[in-house]
Image 1 (tube, rainbow over the protein chains, first blue to last red):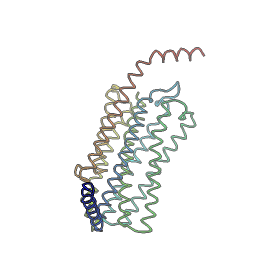
Image 2: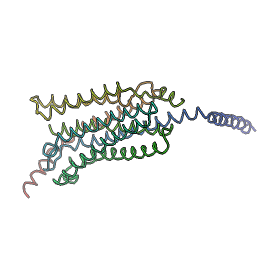
Image 3: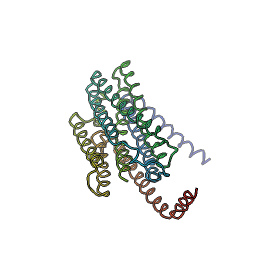
Image 4: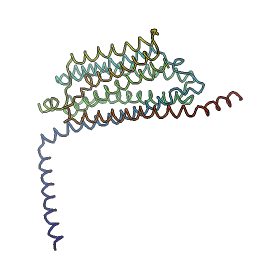
Length: 219
Length: 122
C-alpha cells in the first residue's frame, strides 16, 4: 500500500519535469540560441581533446627525439630556411582567415570568399613545402623506420600536416556551401568553427617549429 | 539580428586592428628564435633554448588572445575552464614523461653500453 502511494507522486513529478522540458524546447528562438553556443562549445572541447593528442605526440618526441640509432640527426636533415618560409605561410593564413571572419560579421560574402581563397592558397603553399620536405627526407632514407627519432618526427609533423589537409578540404567544402546557399546562420557557424580549427593548427605549429626544428637543430 | 547578438554574447571576433597587432607580435616572436638559430648567434646553448621556448610560450598566449579570442567570460566560463584543464593535463603529461624517462634513461646506461659493444663486435 505504502509503495503504491510513494510511487504515484514520483511519476507525477517526473511527468511535470518532462512537460517542462518540452515546453522549453518549443521556444524556437531559445532553442536556436542554445544550439548555436552549444556547437561552438562542443567544437572547442573537440579542439581541447586534439590538443591532448598533440601533447602526447610532443611527449613521445621529447622522450624519443634523441635516439638516432646511428642514423641522421636533426642538424643533418632539417633546412631551417624552408621551415621559416612554411611558418610564414601558416602565420599569414591565420591573419587572412581573421580578415575573412571580420567580413563575414559584416555580411560581406564577396570579401569573405576572397579572403578565404587567399587563406586556402597559403594553406596549400604550406602543404606543398611540407610535401617537398617529406619527399626529400624519404629520398635520403630518413624514413619513419630509420630510427626512433624519425618515427616520432614523422608521426608528430605528419599528424599536423593531416590536420591542415583536412582543414583545407573543409575550407573548399565551405566555399561551395556559401556559393550555393549564401551566408546563412548555419554557414556562419561552420565558418567560425573552421576559424577556431585553423588558428588552433597555427598554434600547434608554434610548438612544432620551436621544439622539433629549432631546438632539434641545436641539441 | 539574433545571430549578431549571439556572437556578442558568446564570442568576440576582434577587429582588423586586433588581428594586425596579434600578427605583428607573432612575426617578431617567430623571427627572433629563427634568427638565433639561422645566424648562429654566439650565445650559450641554455640561453638559445630559453629564447626559443620562452618566446614560443609567449606566442602561444598571443595566439590564444588575439586569434582564438579566448576570454574568461565566454560560454559562461566553460571555454576558459576547459582550456585551463587541458593545460594542466598537458603539463602533467609532458613534465611527467620527460622526468620519468630521463631517469629511466640514466639507469639504463649500462645496457646501452652493452649494445654499443655488441654492435662493434659485428
